[in-house]
Image 1 (tube, rainbow, N blue to C red):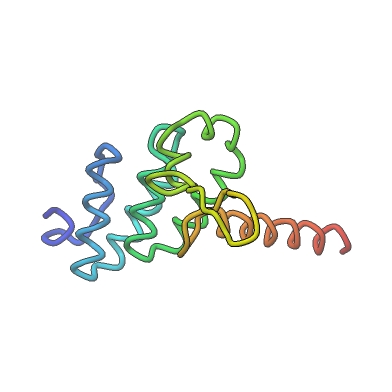
Image 2 (cartoon, one colour; image 1 turned 180 degrees about the vertical axis):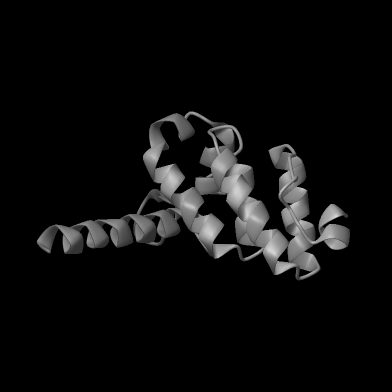
Length: 138
C-alpha cells in the first residue's frame, strides 16, 4: 500500500516469504517497478533455505533476471543444495524421476518433461563458460 500511495519502496523491509507474495501481487497488477524492486531485494536475500521458493516464484511470474540470478546461485551452491529435499524435488519433479520400461530394453530413469530446471542450469552454465572464454581471449 505504501508503494501505491507514496510511489516509493525505499522503506520496504520485510521477510522473504512476504516479499515473494508482494512480487506475485506486483506481477498480477502489472506494477513493474515494484516487481523489479522485489526481485532486487530477493536476490540480495537469497540463501540455501529460500533459494527454491524464490526461483519458483520468479519462474511463475516471468521474472527472468531473478530466475537467472537463482540459476547462478544454484550452480555456485550445488553441493549444499543437493542435500535439501526441496531442491532435489525442483530438479527431479514432485515425485522425482520415474522408471519406465521401453520395448527391447530394461527399465531406465526418465526425468519429467517440460521446462526442466536441469536444462536451464545447463544453459546458464554454458552461457557463463562461453562468456569466460570470450573474455579470456581479449
